[in-house]
Image 1 (spheres, helix red, strand yellow):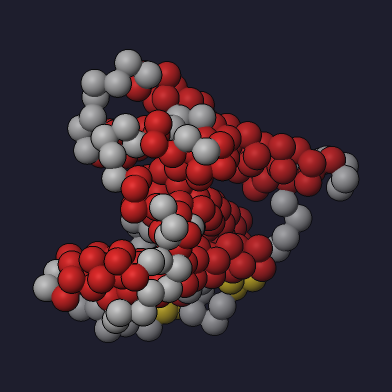
Image 2 (cartoon, rainbow, N blue to C red):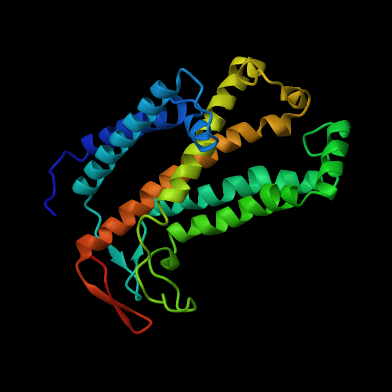
Length: 271
């Protein structure tokens, strides 16, 4: 791949501006468009504009990512098994994407389910305790879900995110299809990130009830830990999307390395 020459001081500025624009177009400007599409909410007259914002954000992301790869001077760092070690920034954002939902969402819900009124009033704690005592959805979706999601997120920087582990029958040693670790977390990142951005903005500007006209915001009164879940969603979505970009950056680097690696006795062409 031919390198594009660029001044060292200009490249970080261009990349920062590009990714800042991507964050605005994908997480802030479209509102909660991914949630509307996933749940079939097509009656909003602003939906077309929101989709166009998100699509433009994806285009800017592709252009910015391509520019970053073309101008990168980092040499791919291969592991003994033929997979590629991610850059430090990729490792950092991926760990953040894995730990933010765990510490900011799963742990508080676990405490509430155990009867600990962390950041909520006594009456709300009793309501949550009553709801969680007989709810598989509460324990599975709100507690175990973020934990499992965090573990899967780490696959974006681990060898098993690039090559199927040896204990998987029939597929062991094969290259993981690149779309598989990219598309699902990208959709989840946009889903939670857009919702978090919208509701965090509502909280910051003081008109949460206008953002939720059908009610339900009364639970936020005197319960700061519930309100804090919205910034957690925003951070989670942002870090998760950054981790996806990092995974693409890492796996594209393997194509520039141009070698054939061995993994559990199977030859892998990492191009």
